[in-house]
Image (cartoon, rainbow, N blue to C red):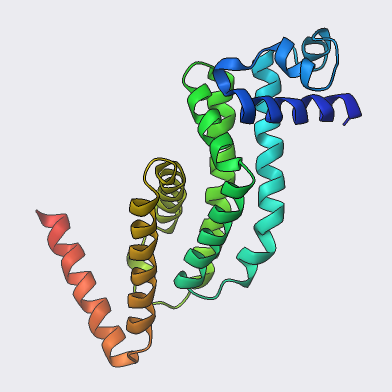
Length: 213
C-alpha cells in the first residue's frame, strides 16, 4: 500500500476524531497533511471510499493489538476483563468516539454502512472463537447459540462504549453486572458433575417447554 494512501487514511481518522463525520470532506482530510484534495479521489474515488478503507484498516489494527489477549482468556470473566481493558484503552485514545462517528456516518453512506458491518463482524468472529473454546465440554454448550452470543457481546460492548460517553456511572454499573455474571458462571462450573448434570437437565426441560408453547 502506497505511503500516500496510508497518510490519507491517517488524515481521515484524525479529521473524524476532531471534526466528526459532518465536518469531513476531501478538503478537510487533505488539509490534515497539506496535500491536494484531488489525491483523495485519485486513490479512493470518493470520500466515502476513503472512510471505508480507513475503517477496515483501523479494525485490523485493533484486532491485531488484542488478539494475543483474547488467546490468553480462560473464562467468561476473563473475557469480560479484557473487554473492560479494551474499552478503557480505546476510550483514552479517542477510538470510542471514532466508532461513534463511523456508526453515525453509516446512516448516510451506504458503502460506509457495509464496511462498518464488516468491521463489526470481524470482532464478532474473534469473540466467537473465544466462546467456542471456553464452552467446550460445558454443560450448557449444547443449548447456546455461540455465534448469536458473540454478536450480542459485540453489540453490547458497542452500546456500553457509546453509553459511557453520556452516563459513565450507568456504564460502570453495567460493566459491574457483567462481571457478576462471570462470577456466577464460575461458581456453577465449580459445583461438580452432579450439579452440572442437573443444570443440563433443567435447561433441556425448559428449552423443550419453550419450543412447545
